[in-house]
Length: 151
Image (tube, rainbow, N blue to C red; front, side, top):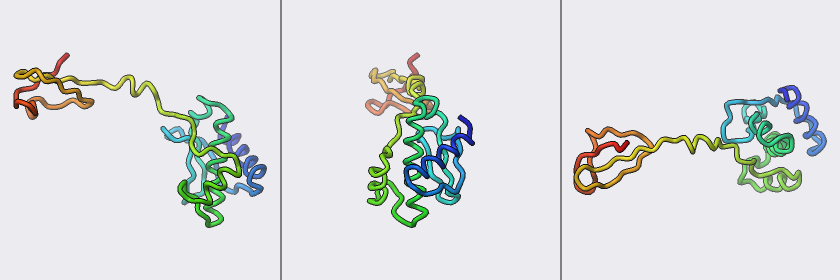
């Protein structure tokens, strides 16, 4: 699906579901990581995460577009367009738009995160860390002994 196809889809959904025209731009943004899409308040454009289409297909993207169009039309009309606003929640139910998209988080990032284990040379206490630390600067919190990186 190209940016032009996405724009046509957004215009079609806006006319069919909301009975209002979409007058701005809609395009894919590869830099989006965890969100399915976003509505930009300043430019009124809609950005969609291309991984949502690759991972879940057309139905997921259609739901994301409905959600972002709820933000769009309510903001244009000057009504409550934020997630916590009553107007927004009512329009979500009326248009059958999802409140959240499916999980787009990269699973392999969590699996590949490195763990460092430090051991106190004096008392044998273990410390598990995600970030490497300077053993010359830090010591054991229990006995103030020196730490060594366990391989």
